[in-house]
Image (cartoon, rainbow, N blue to C red; front, side, top):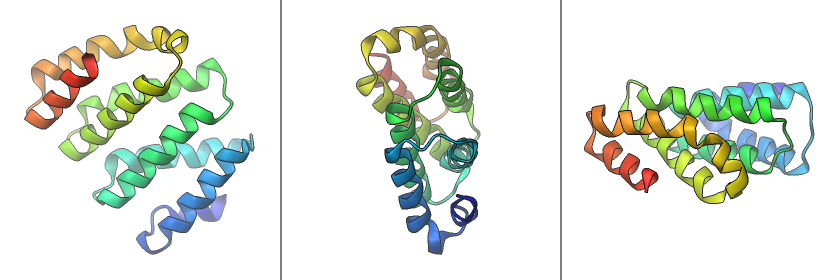
Length: 145
């Protein structure tokens, strides 16, 4: 996992690194290193200038949130991370966060989703009003429906 953590930053070896991490998530290998790698991937999902890196990161984060066994605190931490990045400085980062949130909202069990409605609602409404990007405002509007 330490090699995968390093390779995520290097475009030539990203595909293998993401594949390895996704396989580990699918096998539900619970250890601290998995959480560290996923945190790094979440950061790259928002901050990377590469479309491919953002897409691979978003797929991995989505798989992690939906399939990996984790406690309420860990899930809340990931949801909070998404909400905090709704006001990221670059449109590309905000768009990928909104895409991941939209997929989570459609795939998360309703009982679990209800717990996060309060966390999501006000920041999304704020983005609907204040976002400079019409694309992001449209995405927020669709997500709020």
